[in-house]
Length: 315
Image 1 (spheres, rainbow, N blue to C red):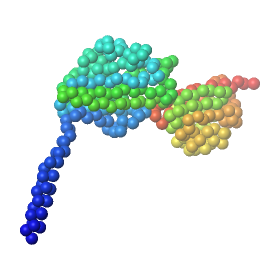
Image 2 (cartoon, rainbow, N blue to C red):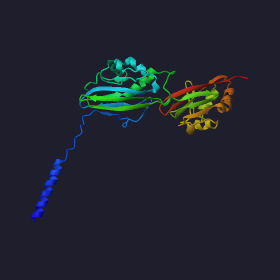
Image 3 (cartoon, rainbow, N blue to C red):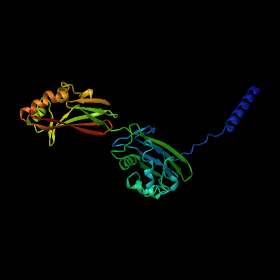
Image 4 (tube, rainbow, N blue to C red):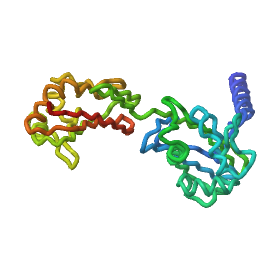
């Protein structure tokens, strides 16, 4: 019995010794800065739209020492050197071979600009424990200030940058943000047709008929179309107004589900004009020009419009 007890005692001592020799698990330092985006927690690709929410919140328990963004793509390279007018630090300026860097603490020109356009709401980020970067405003400012109707990013272009944060303990973290650009709908007039190219998918479509023909206006406002009369004419919703959509479809016009969600589609008014519009124009002799304005809004909120002019002359 004594031998058994002694053996048990030895085993217990060995177990205690083994446990005591185990290395203590290192406690992870939770003071490292954290970068978060509530609207896009996984920092997937952002789609650029009118109400883009790309707010990024940085939490730094030890205080922020440095904060920069380094661009890595700039809409095919167009416009990147235009940032140079706001950059005071020469080494951070963009060139044909280098993408620019924006310094949120040490570059007074950058801080002043970004504060003016509401990307930043702070006079200084130095030693701050928290900061919010409104990057949606940065993207909209770049698009509105650096581009115009003649020079725009092309469909599927991207702008990206890496946000780099270092705290006063020299703990560094970073996140890359990528913004994808989808072109607004393009509408081309061919004969009496609207040819639509909407990479962002057709979401809404309205046809405004502007005519001096009281007979035509009355027909469009009546029970057959249920159009809405306004100051400039009668509007027919080609998707939401099912009465108008069904009636126009009888003239071979793409409406409703044949229009919504489409990226490439044609709205052909030729049969509608020849079989209905002209009959009403003749009724009250409203000869001259009649306008048909098609407005397309895509799923990203981008809108385009084009006007087709039809002139009817008395024989």
